[in-house]
Length: 151
Image 1 (cartoon, rainbow, N blue to C red):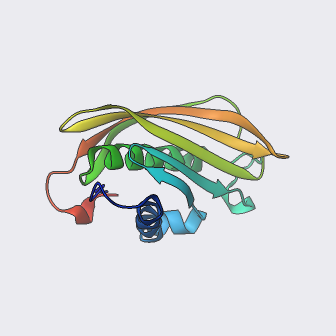
Image 2 (image 1 turned 90 degrees about the vertical axis):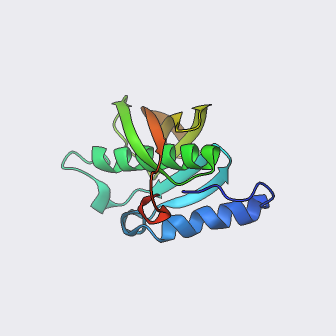
Image 3 (image 1 turned 30 degrees about the vertical axis):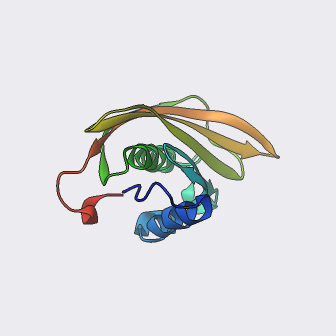
């Protein structure tokens, strides 16, 4: 995703990010909601439904991984202000995701000309309390080519 003009208002920047999420069919399928977006930082959330769970009642690891991947890419893309893709990422699941909502908070921790390294904490909200359920780190790369391929 491209970051765009440096003078964009915070509300317009968030609206732009929400537009990108709305254009991603999988994000729409899982009900992703963007709650905060600024240069190099994002709060992306998914309400937990039964359709997102695996056989033991936990949110499926693929959904947690999706959330980390998308949040990392938004953090890197907005920090670099160019179209980007995920080059790689690693995730550590630290507890089962059981609750009402997942929250991913990602930030760019190193930004260069061709890539950004980002970190993400994923929390599950249960009975109003946030509990860490996963940690992720990824490399977000400048997209060589058109913006149509970027997130």
